[in-house]
Length: 340
Image: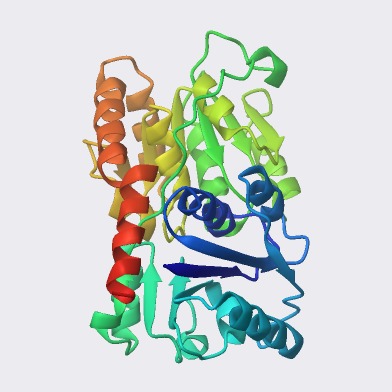
């Protein structure tokens, strides 16, 4: 079977990272694959490291005529059985042809870009529900989850991040954006005495969040780490992963927490609420509820055994449903269903 995957984004985010992981994973199967990306996109380095030389197109905007023409030529040359486009920019320029046209969504996107697709793939059941509620036929929508690589790194040195060895460390990962609700997390940290927070990410709210930490008297316990590429090493050195997001369609960081065998605390945004069985594979708290978030964090770092139970159940759930092997098998089954 011949599959072309097309990504038009030039960002470095959860969808782009999973695109690279899936392309590399599929390259080790019997699928013949062609990978098309936006020129000089960050995912290029991940693909090259995985042995994939991608084709690069401009992808200047949704509906970009030049890129549409170039993609049409590439499709004619490769002759795919199925073209999988990622998000709206790539989908908007994909021509029709003698192939199955599938688009993959990782959020609640405007369906005006997807009308010519034969099938849509969503990475959560809730996004499938959204598609159906907005008029997309249920039989033409499928749920296929993400996976994260099970790679264990040596723990980062706490001393290198200005953190004592004998204190609980809570890790949060993500863009410094209002969707991530790190303002709520800082309010919660004021009620978790003795614990330190590592906040790994960059974004427009950097100075605002730092000012909030100072107002709360947390400047010695909250460490702004900036953009990091060593989330595994950070998790290995931390005691707990927290995902306080207001808006989180999936929550790849939760999968990373399970892989690294760390207890996970999250707010009930759509993604985490769909992933976590509270009190079993993690703890869920109401959205924007700093006291409840603080109480949950205190529970997992208090040493009473809850953390260990959450870790074991979370890891088992990851292995059964979100490991590379499990997810790649589901994609291969889906491709065979689309192209008998």
